[in-house]
Image (tube, rainbow, N blue to C red):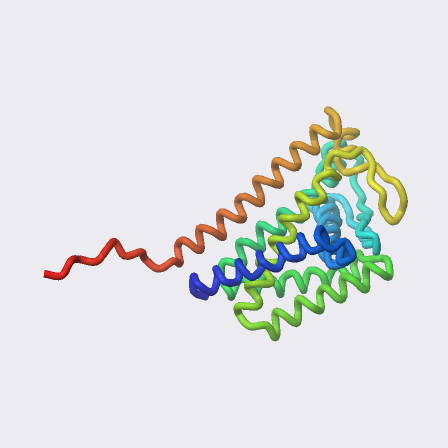
Length: 249
């Protein structure tokens, strides 16, 4: 994939993202356009909790996604303060970490297609292992199917543009839903629950809003790294700029 094609993929993904971001502001009746993207963000947030639990030596029992855009991951831990805090932090860090990986993959068409296949496989694995409600099964199954179609049938440019688009959307979700990091409670499909930062505060020390600020700063650093990696690849693939033409003699 040439530098020009990579830049075209990024511009197309950015343009579509801006349209989906601004249209509901200008035309409130079109707010539903953002709904599937909110669900995608929630999915990777809840998977972040579950994978953090597994990496910490705990268990990941269930994942539920609800039509209102909320979600719940049911995990197991040994009850230690550090493990409880690590699992709680895994959710907010899930979308920016996935965005980082997608930006890295989107630098080349081949790796972008591989990333789509990996995401498809991960979601196909999550369906029988963890997704436990009907709406969640329908959404995760449809999302995995769409990714598979792009990976199989999409051109190199389309695969790269879709990878860029998902990375940008997960970036935007880290900021558009950042207020969640500074709340003590969250309303989900199961009712009112302590927020992730409140769980960290209860497990460790300091107020929940301090942990919210720390997670927001870390998310910003992760996303900045992803953008820098993609931009450096564009610069490396750019054609050399001529220094100037000599005057005819």
